[in-house]
Length: 290
Ligand SMILES: Nc1ncnc2c1ncn2[C@@H]1O[C@H](COP(=O)(O)OP(=O)(O)OP(=O)(O)O)[C@@H](O)[C@H]1O
Image (tube, rainbow, N blue to C red; front, side, top):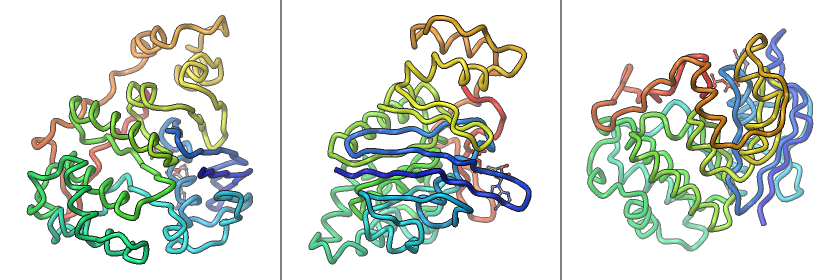
């Protein structure tokens, strides 16, 4: 079974310590979440796992093998796939062609790229957009194209960076089910996401980063009841006294009351946002967490 281990990873950018001795794991068959406020170091840690960012210190292991210095393209061959916060699909290619390009990369595994592409289009529900240019589809659909492209290499470890931004409520619901299915297939799914109801619903385990430091790891209920996490959510002055673990379903409304409401979910086709031809994530830019 797949196992990712990130051990004591530190990343410094000049005087900024983006990640500070963080240790996290992600296992096959599970959805693992990495959450934290803006600037907590989540994307930096993803970059370390995929090889885009060299850690200042610490190591990364996949199935016990040290991949800390393995180049990004070789990590992909080892079964690590990733989607980005800022969408990366080829705008001038159709949705189908985008997926096909990725599927072509696994020829060596004896899978037929055309069949893989067709199956993914059906499975992710992209039939309607298969012939549409990727730069002409709604943001939510573009996110699903990213996911399909990542799945085309049949990854053992799937890293998703804010995959639900731009999805409508209904699309998010379906997306959550899809994540559970992917884990049920034995994949390790590691997700960075600001949509807390989604995270609490789909995650087996959650790691919480705050200013580069791992402050908690546990089940959704454990993490929501953790005094340090609640302090990070509510701010220094508003943190409640540490008390008995509240029921997970009770925590969310309480937290919502304390913070500004989250940005609304993208509304499907109407939520397309583009800048210089690049599809935007539409993700939350505010400092609010829940
Ligand atoms: N290339 C870089 N050079 C300098 N500082 C950086 C760089 N990349 C990230 N940082 C800083 O490192 C810290 C962590 O950033 P990171 O993007 O990893 O956080 P994040 O948790 O993913 O935030 P968000 O939720 O907003 O995406 C921030 O203070 C950020 O400004």
